[in-house]
Image (tube, rainbow, N blue to C red; front, side, top):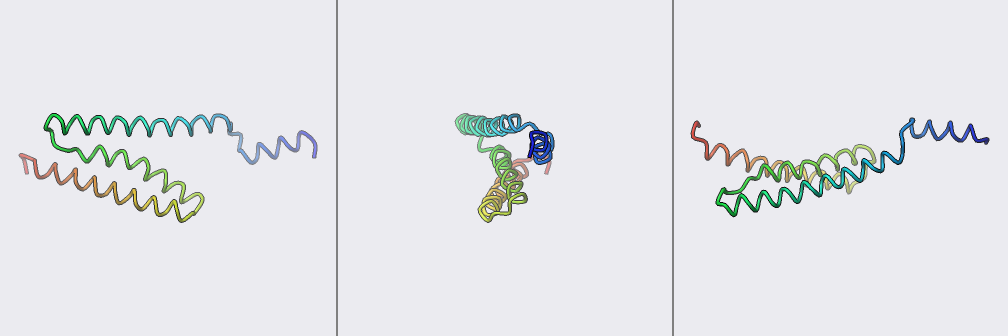
Length: 111
């Protein structure tokens, strides 16, 4: 194989995507999740501290990112671990969403 054939094969495999840029985006996504978790903890603690009750909707949002990540990983690589984690996070998102909606309905002045 000559140099041009190797480059052509590499381009076909990567579909003209920059591998370095993909790695940077992956690291940025991981950083976003960490920042979101820290903010959720701060907001959750502050709301409880000032007597505002609990906002389960924040946790539903936080866990939805993990849920989505594991579902995408499962659909792409079909490993059992990803399916189990996707189901666990889906259950958490459903539980926290339900808790948040129930709290909204129970404390509503219009309903």
